[in-house]
Length: 209
Image (cartoon, rainbow, N blue to C red):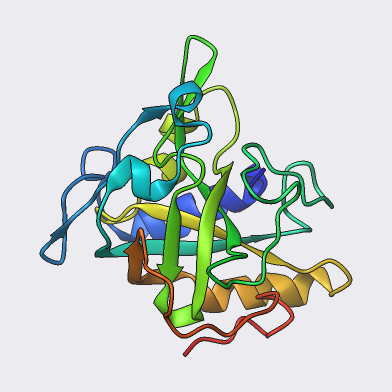
């Protein structure tokens, strides 16, 4: 269920520090003219609800994308996910019918998690040419809302996509994930039919288009 605390700390200590200010209060600011559609949804209400049902029409937005792998998942060396929808474990080829597992930030209140996007919400990641589906939580510890996954980066919502990497050298996979990290355009509630380059992201070398 997302990358380990040390990786979150790395992003928080480098990328977020570079922003020069806290992003806690900017998570819903405009995204280059577009607004975040982030919505805290009780997981018990969102369970089984598709992204289209929860949010409605297709929308293009900018998001801060990172990757997590088999090696830095929690627990380490696993593909375990917290909110399975169509996969029992993190995976997916990136097609509309088999989107890649995506993790999003969440808030814990009174022992319950409230996700930034409901499980089942679909995105299309333009630079990766892959569809993705929310099936996991990004951020560990008793107060994940204090971490960057929920706070976002420079006013952009944080999306964390599973790249795979089992059977591939861990340090190579880390470099692969670094190549896809950044602010980039995504489509929320995408229609089918966008270009797809299917397959495990790490196995492709984290190629972008």
